[in-house]
Length: 336
Ligand code: X2X
Image 1: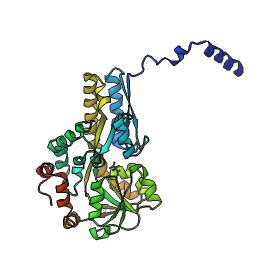
Image 2: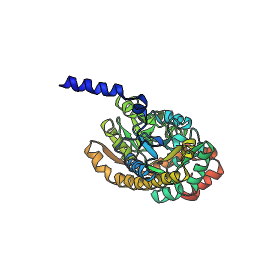
Image 3: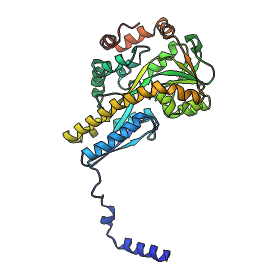
Image 4: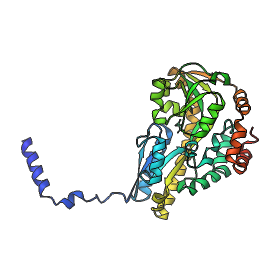
């Protein structure tokens, strides 16, 4: 009976004209864009982007389909930036600090201890500082959406020893993302920083290529780094966010109306994601402690003084130039 059915099916299939089989279904989207990122699918960035993609599909009458590829599925951040520029990937969230390998001023929010709190972060990034960075991104043929997505305040984790003071960082083998500012910051603390893309961080920690890393609580949790790290020092040494970037040709290929839908939905999703991350960061201490991590409070003044004494602020003021530095100081107060 089964055999007969299969035969019958084959016979019907063989009789169908090839064009009928290959033709795109009537509902196929005119544009199908890939949205890549390095975070786990459980992170609010992916949860909110998924909802936004669904809204965009509906609001464009099915013309634009956005498929999300979390977890560096399409490649490391460094690879994906190349793919975004070539058009192989259309949308990508990337830390400004990593983007700085292409757009140097995009690293400016990563200056150690610059932002005292979120009350300084969002007015700056949604205001003049963000506009300055977006302008430079545009010069490189990429489009940066207006609203940045939150990664968060970064904290140091370690498998080998607890970090209490800046002295504990001397000679510490720490992973940093691929960015001159990150290497510079941890070199100023006297660490031996190794640049590793996030896609390789879990295994680098597991195999002890490095002893530690630094990331916001939500990213540590979503990436399950508590499985391979013991100590978590609350340093808040840097605030980090993701620019949502589009390949400019792909973005411009959409109609003006569809572009407006995309901007509206993704900028709104970014605001919701910011609130999710803030809530998570406030509540994750309990969960991470239960997962076996030991939290350590630190004195930010000691860490900041170590950076100043190493000449970190003077060096980076020179690199960013007066205009950018003044824009940062206007938002956060005097640095150095
Ligand atoms: O690579 C990291 O550590 C991460 C996930 O925080 C960034 O994207 C900068």
